[in-house]
Image (tube, rainbow, N blue to C red):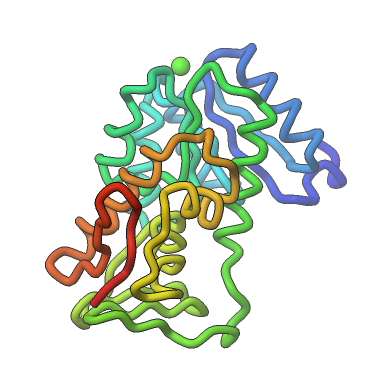
Length: 230
Ligand code: CA
């Protein structure tokens, strides 16, 4: 990998199917990312810790250690590097998000490599965050969100959100009371068109609510979408 190829930063890809790994490597490299590939989950976790990539693309079913376990172990160690899962089945999606693994996104196989690259770029854009001091903290009821520090408290207690969960809540809290449709949230938070599926929005909303607990300020407007309301 040349230095030039890594101008966007290094992405770790852990995928045991060589054809998929090669394709992902090719497209990410073309887009200006450095790419490091591991075939085995244990080696993948070690590489994530050693190489400090800007993002990880993790297959789920891997020899050695499942992709979900790699993510879990990173999060347990306080490592919030963006993670995008490659899932083999659509019905794994709820499980991935529901496991509170701190996944930032996922694509379902078979996927378009261009789509995956778009997701990696989107997740990095989101996690780049606002410049320090650029925005004032937002308060809705018992929830305070600080866009500059990317911190959230609910009734005074710090809440740890993934970057996607944070951006979703920030989007809602930017205009309290405004009802956003799922399509608006997909476009505004995820940064890509609604074909990704509005279920993505629902599962992430459920996750943010669970983390905020009784202090949750996200209301469902049946048949319309979601709003942050005190
Ligand atoms: Ca696999």
